[in-house]
Image (tube, rainbow, N blue to C red):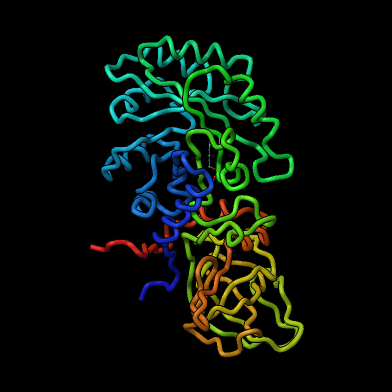
Length: 373
Ligand SMILES: *Cc1c(COP(=O)(O)O)cnc(C)c1O
């Protein structure tokens, strides 16, 4: 029998979350962001759940190729644009749209020979200070692109640094609007946090939204709002089983470094999941796990292949009991139990994004809710 650890990808959740994004930004089109192998879920695996999207946005030409091989004929956007002049050949061949964020990329386009003029998304740096033209330099870059025969459409894009937090987006929206007001072209501003919190404003919504993490059912502004508040469903469940039980006396310790000492006689469950599976090694004591749908705390250091939990809250647990590391747990009394990846991440000092992206290739993955062949 294989190790009992597996990740489940829920196609119904992806579909539902995509619809949530549409509800937040009616009349905008949706770039489903599938960079980083669809945030660790697997590009092929999420494809069916997201195929009603208007386009896919990602970083890697190799991932764009995989989408075309899956017969996706619709728009694909390279969010960082091309990394060298040669990449433009692939854009021409596969009809990829690409972000233009610096003068070098315009130089490469100007020298590129193609029969198929490109659709580009010119990026403005409105305060994130990562990629994009300064507002003062934006207009001349726009004019330069529009004059090129290699380019047939110039859209405009910016990225928010604080869409999830109190600082907000107003300062960036103001700069973007001020410097694009009379320029012709479509606009795209919102990531997940922008979509959920700000896209009710048509000026912020623009023509295209770019939701990523919300499609996978994590909240971009946890703990202010959790996924349930936003009506999102987890697209990934990481689940395993108990493979051993230990009975500890008061003072006995658990795992490497004896980090945890039992204050009283305690039943401990050993879970087949460790940091080599992508579970964070720095998870502290108290990080929640579900055993048979009941919340129990991690005790002791996470090791490479295993972690331990205190079973006091679920005395009936035994070898073979189902363990949910995050996502959907078993149904109890007609109610599906849930453990949010955001909550686990917060205990570990990180965000749901990082945990889902870190799922290790050694974890078996099963897609649920699709048409199996
Ligand atoms: C990753 C990314 C997104 C999606 O961000 P989420 O917070 O996951 O919604 C949108 N736009 C750009 C430019 C990105 O790099």
